[in-house]
Every structure is written in structure tokens, then in C-alpha cells.
Length: 231
Length: 231
DNA sequence: AAGTGGTCTAGACCACCAT
DNA sequence: TGGTGGTCTAGACCACTTC
Image 1 (cartoon, helix red, strand yellow):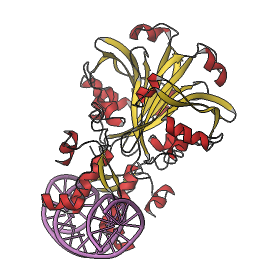
Image 2 (image 1 turned 60 degrees about the vertical axis):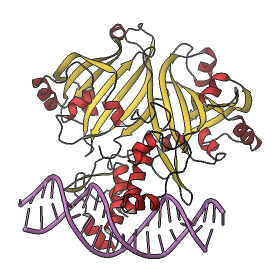
Image 3 (image 1 turned 180 degrees about the horizontal axis):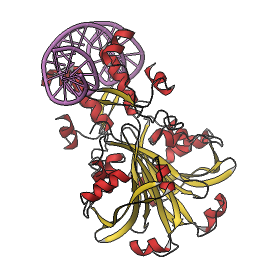
Image 4 (image 1 turned 135 degrees about the vertical axis):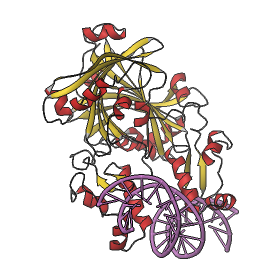
């Protein structure tokens, strides 16, 4: 209820919210429960708190698209609203020592697939995804991934025992290779974004390695970082 | 103590940690306190918990440099270990409608400064930073920022009433402009990283706008995203 | 002096997992 | 059936801010 009140703009930017004691009394719950609710809102950047003074709404809440975009954690990366995925090559087992070592696999054998991502019909990215060969086989058997919205890693998720918990990114700029440029509507040699991602599950095991190239005229990489919690 | 035990590797990867009840008894603290400690470790990606089963170390803890790097929140961006900053132009007030509008300032007046960042003596980035003119004046009066380790925004922090709470990033690839390329050791026209950052404080007020260009042969943009908390 | 959020104790019930 | 983490109540003390 508190979240809804804040998101619906029932408080002005910078306005002080009710105190823990007030809400605890009003809703007949313990102070601890009110605190938990507030901490969730703090984590989402909707409110901030100053000891001795009170709780205030951030003004982020009133910037449309700001608190709605799940902003800059894994979630955003795995549910890519508004764009479409096209499977150029389904999962296939092959030998790739480098990709295998990135995934810390026991042998050089990996499963590889290739997808292209489009926005409103215009392709803007081509991605090679490398997986554990066993996972690749199971996905292929079930026809996963398939064209449409969504991402490869959210499809992979269904074939893993533990949830995907994080991803390391490495972003750089390169001249577009000839084979790739035609697939995403840019000139060969043009400056493009090159992003490597290494996904791991909650146990810290690597579960996916992806190499993406983005056409910078159709897409720019956007993300949002926030302070951890309390410094 | 729990964090130290995990970081020092006193538990094997995947090993089950003591339960909340055990630690509560052993250290003479309430279960609530033990829970808080565990939640901090979960937030840092050192352990994960499965209801009904227990708490386990992630394996991230044993990857050197993994849990030490503060990984992919604001903190990492504001304390840039191992690199040096050189002030090419101190804060100066000027008219720049675009930068002013990004900062949501009332007029076109902004303070601008230029810094260059180096690693082991090799410059790899040039950044223009835009601030509220008043903040710029106060910083200039105190000779801030100055050459050395650290970042502009951590220096700016000292001149703000509220802490910097987050930053929006926009990353793309561009050909290196002639004026910039010489400053960071790359060829004109070469593909470089172009990063725009918009910093805001805990009240959601924009406090800094930075435009950086990185030489991709000397630097690649690295960051780490993790799952929010529990899905 | 009164009020704020931050931290802590003590105790309870629940859903889920292992056996 | 007993143990696990997840959630909740009730009550306490603290540092700090505000008046």
C-alpha cells in the first residue's frame, strides 16, 4: 500500500512521509513490518531516510519511466521490453577452447547459438551465446529459444536448477567486422559497441557467456547504478 | 566476524554455513541480528540462502578480486582504484544550454571542468564534467578538484548537502574526434567509447553531468550487475 | 524535551525441505 | 517429524535532529 501511494504520487517530491510509529498504529502492524516496507522502497530508490528527521520521496518517483524501468540490475538485462529476438542459429555443440574456459567448462566443448535483436523491425545487435553443451542439447530438444520477445538467458533460466544471480560485463568499442555489419545495418569498419557478458547463478557457477555487437546509431547502452544501501 | 570467516575461505565453496539458531546461541545474540548479518552477505553476493535447506557460500568469495572489487554499483565508479586524475581545466562558469538542461538547471549557466584519467602514466580517458554554477564556484575557491587518485564526483560530494545516490549511464561507440584523440593516445577516427553519466543525490536532484571518452585499447568498461534481492 | 530512524532482544507461527 | 529460512509482534535503548 505504501509503494502504491508513493508511485501514484500521493506525496509531493521531497514531502515527508508518515513516521514508522504513525503507520504502525494506523495499520495495526508492528514497527518492524513498517520498517521492512520502507527498506524495500529505499532499495528501489523511491524514498530516502535521514535519521532524526524522517522519510522523504525522492523525485525519482515522479520521473516517468524512471522507477518503472527496472533500472540497471540483472532483471532489466533479462527482460528486454519492446525488442524482438530472432534465432539465426540454434544451439549446436562445437569445440571452442576460449569460450569453454570463460565458462570454466572441463573440456573445449561448448554449445553455441546466434541471435539477432531488433527494435521496430530494425536489427541493432548480433549476439553469440555459449552454454554448457548439456544445457544446449536440452534446449535444442525443446526448440528453445524461439523467435519473439524475451532474451536467450531468460530462456536458459528454465533449464537451470538455480536462478541466474548476476552478470559481469565488459564493454568496449571496435570497428565493425564485415560479416556482422550487414546483419545489423551498419557499414563495415564503423565504430560499434562490443559487449561481453558472463552470467553466473546464485552458487557462483558460470552458466552463460555472450558476445554482443551493437549498432550505435540504433542503440545505446543504458543503465543505472545506485548506491548499495547504507554506506 | 561472519564476513571475515567467509572471505578468509573458512568454508568450502558450496559448503553449508551454521544456521541462524546455532550462531544465535554461539554468540549470544538474537536471531534477528544473525539474520541482518546474513542479509548483508547475501547483498554482497558472498552467500546465498535456500528456505528449508540452509545458507551456502557462493564461490564468488573464492574468486580473487571478485568480492574485493566493489562491483558495479556507484561506489566503484566514485573510487577508482589504481588510476590517476589530472585536471586539464578547473571549474569555470559558462553558458551551455544542453548541459544545463540535462542538469535541470533554471538557466543556461553551468560550471564546466575537464579532467584526464591515466593508468600507470598512460592517459586513457578525457572527461568533461558539468555542475551547478554555485557548486563550481565553491570548488574553485577551495582548489578542488586537484590532481591525484580519486574522482571528480567524489570531490563534488564534499560540496553537497545530500549524498550522491545513483547515476544513469549511456554508453555508445563513436569515432575519436581530432581534439580528443591526441590527449589519450589514439588515432583520430578510431572507434572509442563514449559514456554520458548523470549523477543524482538521494533526493533525486541531479548534481553532475559527465561526458567521457575512453581509448578502448587502454581501457574497457567493466561492471557487474546482480539480482536485486529476492525475485 | 520530544520525535526520528537505527539497532537490538525475545518470542511466535509459517512454508518448505530433509529424513 | 524436526530443522531451515521467511515473516511477524512487542518492547527496549541509542544517536541524532528539531523545537
